[in-house]
Amino acid sequence: MQKLKTRVIRKDVNPEWNEDLTLSVEDPNLPIKLTVYDHDTFSMDDKMGDAEIDIKPFVEVLRMKLDNLPSGTILTRIQPSRSNCLAEESRVVWNDGKVMQDLCLRLRNVECGEVEIQLGWIELPGSRDM
Image (tube, rainbow, N blue to C red; front, side):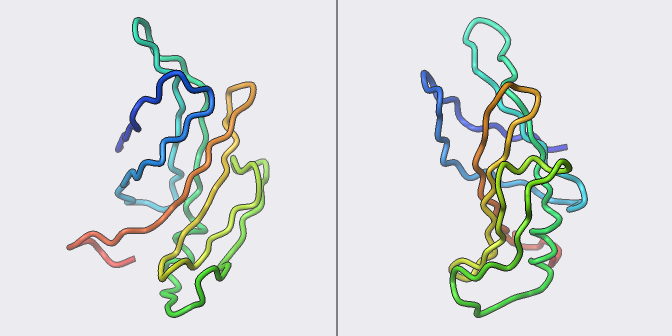
């Protein structure tokens, strides 16, 4: 299992990370788990909530091997439901020659909180073709 961390943003109740994190996906049927923490200097960090990202719809579009679509073309839409953490509709879009997905996730196990994420696919040299 891979674990990645963003940098700590101090003294901000509405932080923006704007960081790129790269995960190696071995099984697209498994969700990506996200946990948000409040960083504490002298004690254990406090868990601020968690969410899961279902990447199956994104990967299904990647497998279509699309090309030469107008930028901004919506390829599929995913609606919020009890089985996902979406706070609003998510769209998989063709953008500048790439498949991208913007997600607004409602954090679980916390009173309130949302996280916005953008998914993109990177083919690494020597990797298996999707």
